[in-house]
Image (cartoon, rainbow, N blue to C red; front, side, top):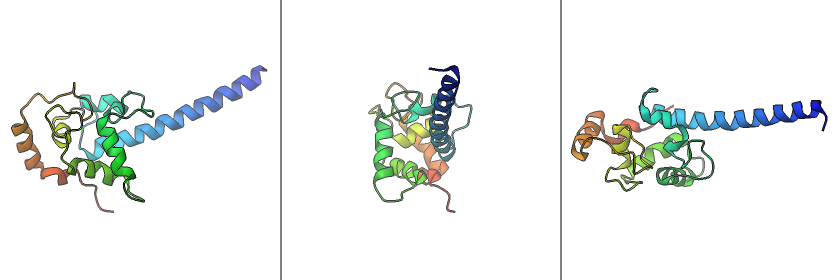
Length: 143
């Protein structure tokens, strides 16, 4: 293969990787914003692991991501913002660690990873969630 062809092939591959990474980062950025997670919070550094089994995203979803994907695909034209809200309204504990997904969002832990557990009690987190306005604090803004 000619060097010029290798350069073209490398450029195409780099563009493809960049577009996939950009799409993924926009979803996680949207989720972190809607869930009121600061950019420097440890959970935001997890990137794609918020919903996926891998930090790089891909086809393998963790249990929270699977629930989110089910909500997103559950109705025609449902926006990701609505799915992010509805998955919390279900009041499930996706990873089975004893904390609902909404409480894990309040605690800034990963709702799809049982090893990422809040360091405070359920009662304390429920009080914090209530002060925020309940799960509706994570409802998407109307446009």
